[in-house]
Length: 147
Image (cartoon, rainbow, N blue to C red; front, side, top):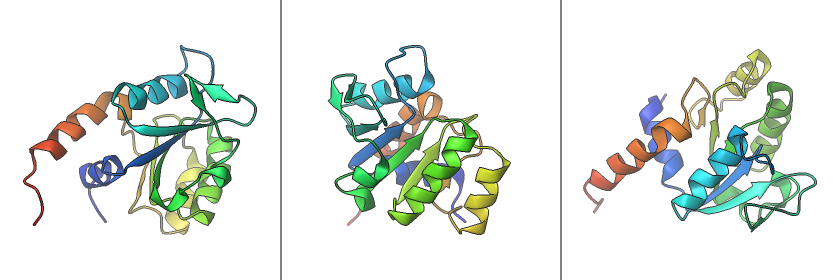
């Protein structure tokens, strides 16, 4: 199984991102994660079942509506009972990389990740994009280009 840092690097090398859990509430972590992507000029799509746009970006109602799910890394910042449903949808859509923010995964989520062989591409063990993302991006930038 890849290490946590290897999974973080893999996640952050994607060209497209989606955020589930952002809202109009500027104090919520979902919105802060969406703003993190925007501030770094990442191609990000907010996923929200009722809001048509968040932070000036058009939303999709579910990850089933993502235009290129197999090329999109997914950030999840939702309660565990919602996260499990998102994980099921993500597996069905072949989402290649998933970062679950701290507090968004419960035991059922961990069991689902383990039982569905998702451990190689899901971050759920306390990794935090807000805290760790810039350091990971910096380390990716420092790596020699592949031949």
